[in-house]
Image (cartoon, rainbow, N blue to C red):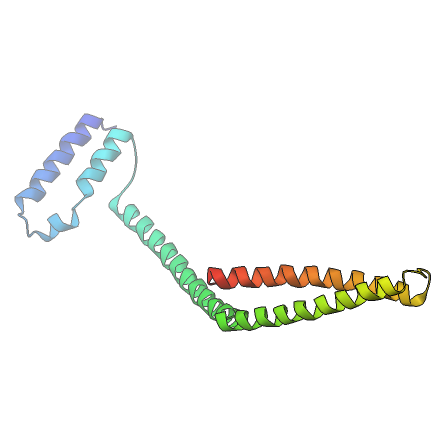
Length: 164
């Protein structure tokens, strides 16, 4: 069995031989990085080669290429989805029109609420009558609708002001 010191001495001899061939040596180029790997193998009791490192790097690169391609496809799909979503977003003009419609609806509901309140007062002497009961139901219904419209109009106006 060869000792680590013998391995180090052999490595140094090989390194000197390769250096002796000159900077433009094909063999020297082939051994580039190999001496460091050999030294690490000796120091750490490893059995790694430049070929193994190259194969691992090639596999890692292939995996990275596959992931990159998958990410490119995902990005393309997300761009398509983004375009679809952009078409569904209301413009500032649309939101202004909706706000105006809601304002008009709110005004009409106010009138209906007032009419129902007048009817309640008019029929208050006979609270069991159908007219009184219908006026109360209409008033409650209109007040509830008014609350929904006011809340929706606030959301639309807030979004419009925020530029969404």
